[in-house]
Amino acid sequence: MGRLAVMEKEWAQLSSEEKREQRFQKWLNPEGITFVSPVAEIAYKQRVQRFIDAYSVRKPDRVPVVVRTGSIPAYQYGLNYKTVSYDYEKSAEIFSRFNEENAFDLDSYAVPYAISPGKVLDILDYKLYNWPGHGLPDDARGYQYVEEEYMKVDEYDAFLKDPSDFWLRTYLPRVFGVLGPFRTIKPLTHIIELPMTDFSALASPDVQAALQALIDAGKEYGRYSKMAVEFARKMLSSGYPATMGGYCKAPFDTLGDTLRGTKAVLMDMYRRPDKVLEAVDKITDLTITTTIASFSASICPLVTFPLHKGADGWMKQKQFETFYWPSLKKVVNALINEGFMVQLFAEGSYNSRLDSVNDFPKGSVIWWFDQTDISRAKDILGDKCCISGNLPSSLLVTGSPQQVKEACRNLIDIAGKGGGYILSPGAMADEAKLENLKAMVEAVKEFGIYR
Image (cartoon, rainbow, N blue to C red; front, side, top):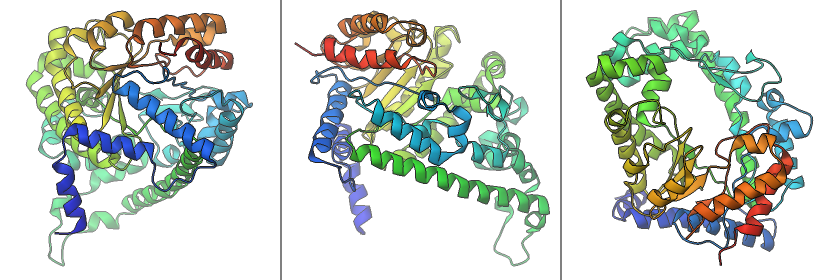
């Protein structure tokens, strides 16, 4: 048995808690990172341990704070989202400058790779989103989803029969304009061992152009990825940990956002509920496999789920417990079993869901709330789950530093009681005032120390 196989067998024999502890140690002691100074190394370990303690529903030395900056660094220095989206070197330069000049003892750092790589999307003629310079004005501060039915109602069976084939020959040609010729390719199972196998589709100039576009996009993404990796290493070596290991989606959201669209999937719950559940089950298994494979090597063990269609008002509680929660719970439990920490970003309000979502082992899940009643959330979930967020993004945009401080103090008093709270905005605020972000950090220094 090879060394890798032995390691995989040993890993499989560990409990979820033991796996999580190994991932925490990997986060605390990042391999291949040389810190710029002993002070930076000490600061790094303090910051990571602060998060680990909060995630584990313990009392860290103080309440951790995550300042979500979005594209703010670009605008602070006279640029905009479009500039940093298309010029990766300029993006890294500006975000590095922001972190260096505004290093008000952050627990993490502002990241440029939360901004989409515009050139890659242009090369592929991406249809799902508009962004500055492509469908949106140059001075817009973010991207915008384009709602459509990217899987038609009569295509459930094709997706269920062979998701990979559906993705390659139906879905991708719809969402990437340059991949339209992939519709003409026969199923890959058509290729057999005989030397006279039909490769006619590959002889098509249109298909060749599509394949060349993928190569070009891959090279461009390589430049973007190089920037992201180098930037992350620079921040880590300076003492600032990454706090995002990867992103994932609830299976129902994949069906409702990525494939069917909001109106269509909500109608499907009434007209073809069995097909919805069958598709969600298929997506659940795919999500588990791809997420574990994608993020196992990440230094930070946190996988974040932005929850869209499970919020209050999107569906009735019985529908939530039928269509949304069971599949999401299955994915989360699979990640927990592999030692990941899972952060569930409850966008909007989850007040009607709180009594039905406290299903996970203590210290394995972080609930990041946007507009949910934080006091009730703490009472229901706080014994087992770390809680984050709830600072109104509108306040960061329109309020004063003193108002922000008072709001932070109130949140810390409520959600920080007994530990297990991370101060952060309820959602990203690209137009937040810099002085208000600083006020958040000042608040944890003044009010976030446990007695």
